Length: 152
Image (tube, rainbow, N blue to C red; front, side, top):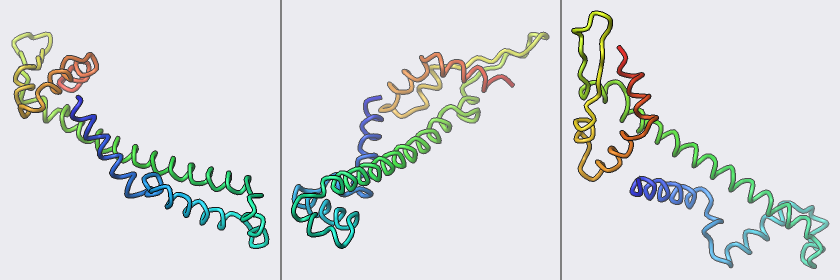
């Protein structure tokens, strides 16, 4: 799980660095960008006052606008990552992934019983990912999902 968390963190940080370079800029670049944002948010007649430091409200508005934009980008990045993660997890626990590791007993006339061979499922993963797979298989949520998916 630690490896996947590191990959997730690296993905989000890389994506944010591309989308919001302000958050990773040097102090000089930040000041320059704040001034540019300040100029955009103030009227042309207020620039003299902006230079004199009388535009705390405009600076606060520019800062709030930047924070809002960064938060939107962060939410978009998190949403993109979560969508990718959902697709990956779906591929791991779909019927197509679980069925080769299941045994169905059809001798009982009352109904069929399907059992997931956990060890076989875990061993289908790469050696590096087996600890994650074992932890995943041990969760109650996975067991409930597998029971539902393998119910023919």
